[in-house]
Every structure is written in C-alpha cells, then in structure tokens.
Length: 348
Image (cartoon, rainbow, N blue to C red; front, side, top):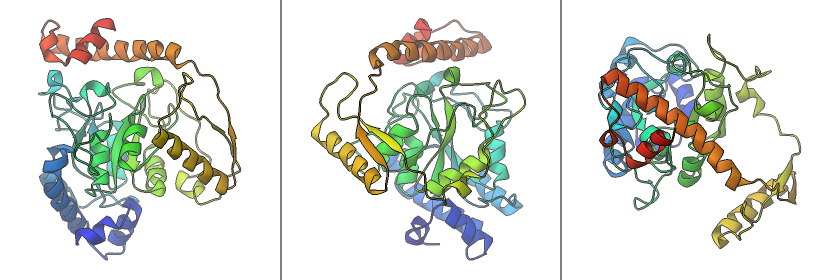
C-alpha cells in the first residue's frame, strides 16, 4: 500500500478496506511502520517501537472488531500494556514495565486495533508542551521549529504526520485539545467518567483527567468512544450511558445551538490579531451552519481557578512520586525528576 493512498483514509475507511480484503492488515501496518521510520527521526513522536509485536499480532489473527487492522499508538501516561514500559515520561519510572493491561487497552484490542508503539507525554503530563528530559523534545510536523503542544503532543504529531489516522491521548487541563489545535486535528475531551481508568485508578486529577484520542476525522473519534466508553468494576462513578452509538449520533444534523462568543481573554485583555481573526472565523462558520452566536463574557475568574487546579495536580503528582520512591526503597530525590515535577510534588 503506497503512503499517498494510505494517507487518504481515516481509521474507519482503513478498517473497511481490510474487511473487504482490498488490502491486508499486514500491508497497512507495514505502510504505517515505513512512514514512521521515514518521519519519526525528525519529529520524535514514537518513543517506544512495538513493530515486531504488532506484526506477530497481525499474523496470529486479530479480533473481529470495528477497527480490525488499524495501527494505533498508546500514550505512555498511566495506561498499561503487559510487558511494555510505563514511564509517565519520567526518569523516575524509566525501568518500570507493566504486568497487566488496563481496561482501556483491553477494549482497544477487542476493537481490533494494532499497537505499533507508544508515544510519551511531558513528565507526568504536567506541561502543555512535550519536552520531557527522558525523551527530549517532540516537533510539530507542520514546522519542526514549533511545538505540537501537550501533553498529548507526540500522539498529535504522529497523526498529523500521517503515521496513523488516530492515536490515544489524554486530557486533564487541555492535553487533547491543545495538541489538536496546534497540529490541525480533531480533539474531544470526553465527560468525566465516560472512559474508565480501571484497574489502576478510579479517577485522574480529581476527575479532571480522561483518556480518548486525537484524530483526523470526527467519525473516528466517535467510533473510538463507542469502542472504549463505559464503566468497569470498581469505578467510583460513571457518566450516564449514551442512548445510542456516538457514531450513529453524528450522522444526524445537530440542533440549533446558542453559542457565547468571547472577544477578550478572561482578564479583559485584547486578543492577538491572528487569534481574534481565528475566533471570528469560527463564529462565522457556526452562524453559517445555522447556530445562534452572541457576544458574551461569562466572567470566569481564571485567576482564582488556577490555584485550585494546581492543588489537584500537585497532590496527584506527589502521590505518584512518593509511591514510586517507596517501591524503589529510596528517599525522595530532586535529581530523579524535572524541576517542575519536584516543585509540584513538594507542594502536593
């Protein structure tokens, strides 16, 4: 399968070609691997290759799921796969190898996805860029001098560069949405409790964090949510069960929405002209689609909100670090983590 042809298809389309035997899962995987080997040295999106395991999985036969044969990356931030590293982007976990699959990983495998590697986040997912000391910087495929954002920057870079049509991502404070915006992709943060973190956590960042994907098409995002959403035993809570598949729902015209348009930031400051133009263009598009757009300001006090968010992330970071230090039988050591992480864990 040539890359030019491969690049035209989203995950659903690739799965359809494989199901109709117009192309084999092996050909699709080999095309993805070839593209990764071509572009990854420049963008540094894939930090752990699983090419051999992926080819063996395809040869052994994949589950008859709706995405059978589609290549996929798992973000290395608390989502485990048996026998694979789970570093959380941190030197503190550089030697940690998972001994089980998380529920999300099991659901992805059941859907027929083929894991060809892992992307990484900034250390513990704390920064809105992807430059961990452990793996160095990731680069935006649109311009290698720019960041793809974070914390799912490597996932977004891989998808944007055409290595694969969708990749696993997580979001606590923008970590799906920021890279999607900076790499020209679709990024949805699901509702709290929609995607389980079992069995390793009941929630992340007090319920602020969740897992999903970055993708080139809306329908891939919808189907991935159909494949991975739903509660697991032990979950402290769950989002209400959706009445019908998300993929089915997006086929219908949306109801008319009432959209608030902010033309200043939360401090009342003027936006950069390019940002203002982008916001206005988005508003015009929404209005042209039949929605009601009205300029408004909800007066959210972001200055008061930020310390509250910081406490939540700091407490979670402290827990992760101190549990690891205890497991290693070591005293807390600033050299084990980056300066931001040490400060965050100390505050937590």
